[in-house]
Image (cartoon, rainbow, N blue to C red; front, side):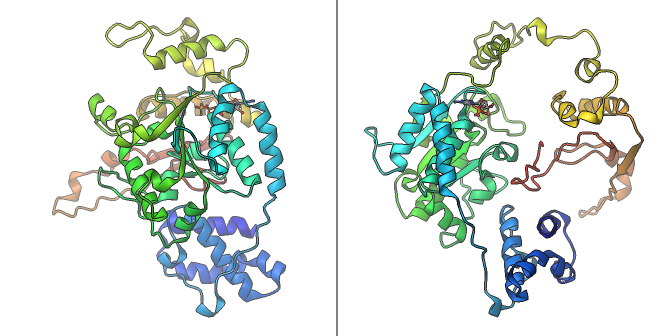
Length: 435
Ligand SMILES: Nc1ncnc2c1ncn2[C@@H]1O[C@H](COP(=O)(O)OP(=O)(O)OP(=O)(O)O)[C@@H](O)[C@H]1O
């Protein structure tokens, strides 16, 4: 329980904008440190440990307690609980997974392991791109390598462009949080990483940096990371000489830039970066996800991604198995949604390209869940800083807006309704944007 409270405290600080964080800390610190008091029988150590653990949770969002004006008395110092890492277990798990790798995965694993364990490759390269369509086992490969390396006492850094991809990786963090990338990236953007910081030290110690979903990143992110790593490692080698393993699938989502033209999107892709030449591409071919009877659809998706399907004016024919004449909600969820088996309900999804369609479908689907509904409404207020008349923006108008990253004005929920988060609240616990 105290650990959940510490997480809640960190979440409130990051997302709740409290007016007096210090008062909150003073009021609740006894609850936040309860388990440490029992374990160490010393209030000062318990307080210092609590401070350190909350700081660690905040660091995932690029914050510290000091930023909220919460400080420890200097005489307490910082304590960290000794975490015992069971290297043997990791090694065993890694070896077990290694035995399962298919030929392409093994080829990639062997090259990366050889480098990480001190050998050099004939190509002289230290940067790889694992190119594989969906389901070809990229994530499985990174996990295998992380476990084997951990077993050998070597740490890895595992990052992804989105929080949801980071949750699938062992110890995964978002690129922005790990490398302190600014939210809005431009060609001259740099990482906000101090070479003397603890984060920089973690990066220096890492044997390999794994970066999943790399094609989603604009190439200015790659450039910013190259500069930061050269600075941290005090080396002019690409990425400061670190072993970089990027992975992903250019057939999936590319950098998302609002209103960008096709040409601008291509120009922002990793492949357009001068650094792309430094990468050795290793291709994975075998789809490890498709079960019997699914190969045909996965093959069709691959052709779609490769641009190999016949099209007229950029329109393609969908396979008949993807079409329905009946109501889409009936087809996916049935007439009544039984919430006794939440996992089954949560495994079904209707995707819409527009928020307004999503809202309509959500409201209809919600009617199929038995039980009373509860409505939560937002409070919107107009503040005009440039002398405009606030009455020009009636509340009804504000309520009708559905800006990206904001819930609708009226959020209707029922017990058993599936809720998707819009923020990265706690990636380690799997609570992030899109889950
Ligand atoms: N060599 C393997 N042996 C057994 N199972 C595997 C192997 N490789 C991958 N898998 C399994 O196949 C599924 C797909 O693998 P994974 O998620 O790693 O693919 P991916 O390339 O990362 O997919 P995506 O691009 O969709 O993220 C997972 O369930 C994974 O556990």
